[in-house]
Every structure is written in structure tokens, then in C-alpha cells.
Amino acid sequence: MSKRKNNKFNINWKDENQVKEYHRQYRLKKKMNRLIERQKETQLFYSRLHNLPLVDIAYIAGLFDGEGCISVSSGIWKRHGRANINIRTQHSLNVTIANQHTPTLNYIKNVTGLGNIYKDSPKRQNYKWCVSCSRAMEFLKVIKPYLKIKIPQAELAIKLQEMIGQRNIKLDNNPRLGKVVYLTEEELQERDKIRTEIMRLNHSYSLDKRIL
Image: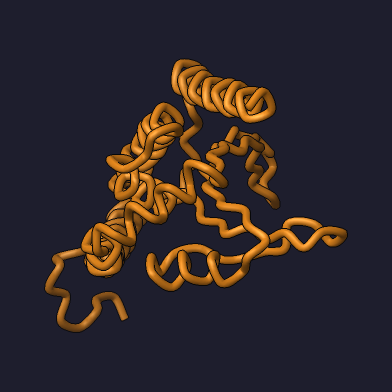
């Protein structure tokens, strides 16, 4: 058939460029609808976290000051199956609380609705509650007003994750779907600088604990 029935888009289906643009717009609209739904689900999910009783927030903040840790992992991301196999650096925010008393970690998980619990070492009865990325940032935002020791690390971690989140939003709104957009050298240096500073603060805190 030379023409499709009910061609309400006024597209010449024999024109390759028009067909490509039609499919691109369709994919973009479908993706944006998914993003809107995901954003609504995320807001509903975080509303519970941001409305926790103050006594719970203060208690968890105290646990985090004593047994918590903020870290930023860094690695490379590779697109397989492509002729041009480029790599890009990825940063991931991680927040953990270690404790031998698993009911305490279960309490944190149940109250916040975040994270998972893992055994820290097969040789020791030590466990960790872990949460990453944007959920880790939201957790830090909630407990930060009640922290006494790890405020600098928390502020840097929130700054880093907000940078990552803002860039991901730009990529989600980018009409060039399926394209890889690499970090600029300035972006990479800024992220690495924050990561290094968090490591330095963690190290100085560990030394202070040993002295005490």
C-alpha cells in the first residue's frame, strides 16, 4: 500500500527521514511518560522517609555518627557489542552502617524503608546496612540536621549526588536517545575531588577514634 490508513500525522512513509523522526518522537514521548510516573512513585516513596518521627531520625543519626560510613566508588562503564568500545567513568554514592546487632540494622531498614543488610565478613559476625545513589542522598538529607561528627562528609555526598542527578535529568531529556554522553574533564575532576575529600575526612575520623 502506498498510503497508510488514518494517516493523522501527515507523514510520507516513503520518506526515510520523516519516518525516523516520527519514531524518535514516539520513543521520546514514551520515555518521558515513564519518567513522569517514576518521579511520582519516587516522591511518594520518599514522603515516608521525610516524615519519620524525630526520635527515630535522631537515634539513627547517632548510630550513623558512630558506626556509619560514606564512600564513593569509582569505576568504568563500557558499552559492549559496539565497534567503537569507549569507556566512561562512573561514580556511585554508598552509605553504610555496621553493627554486630542485626535487630538494630533491621530496625533502620524497616523504619526508613531503604537499603539491604549484608554480612560484612565471613569470618566475623559483623553486618552492614547499605544504601546507594539517590536513596543514600535522601537518607543523608533527613539525618544531616542531627549529625555531630559526619556533617562534612554528608554535605559533600549530597553535593556529589545532586551533580549526578542533574546530569542524568539532562540526559533523560536529551532527544538523542541511545547516545552515550561522556563526562567532561572538568566534571570528572570535580567528582574525583569530592571523592578524595570524603576519603580524607573518613581517614582523619578513623585516626581520631584510635587516639580516643
